[in-house]
Image (cartoon, rainbow, N blue to C red; front, side):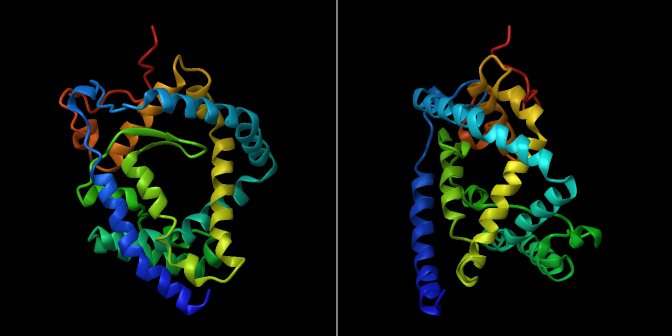
Length: 264
């Protein structure tokens, strides 16, 4: 990409990020609409329609493709592709760590990226772990959380799946936070996307039994996926039991996230 195009994108990013951050920050839940599980889902009817679409897509394409991929590709190669995808995502992790004021996290991600790129054959080998450099991961959804943006309502996105409004905004912004996407020429700039998609497909095949039990064996797959996503995400952010979603009722941050709330 020419230098002037890179500079143009960088110049627009702060305005774009600020606008999306403000949109996310405006998502304050109605306390009366928050359930005892700390779930705010005012658009459940629409979300369930998207969930039905995602379920059909998974059944027709993703599940068989994931199983086929996982059976055809040796575990070692799957791991290498996953390592490569993770390494190419590190510059975005560095950017978000800096935005969060997490200099330690930014430093760890920088060391991991340089170590795996130089000593790990471009990232196919996780050399940083061999040198005991801790893993560090974050995203713009967490950046918004650190900045004080509210979680907002639960949403299910087509193809992507469960999210909150804050995380949905974060996923859009993260498309622009990786400097490699501006610096690498075509087609190299698409390697990260391809590796990430392959890694996700491999995960769908590798963890097929667990995913299938949620999507196809629970009494209400929508409610089950929603509960698991929200509790896991809040745990990742250090916000167990929906503390930042204005949940005045939840008092059990250690409830079983795999329990089916509709089972009799």
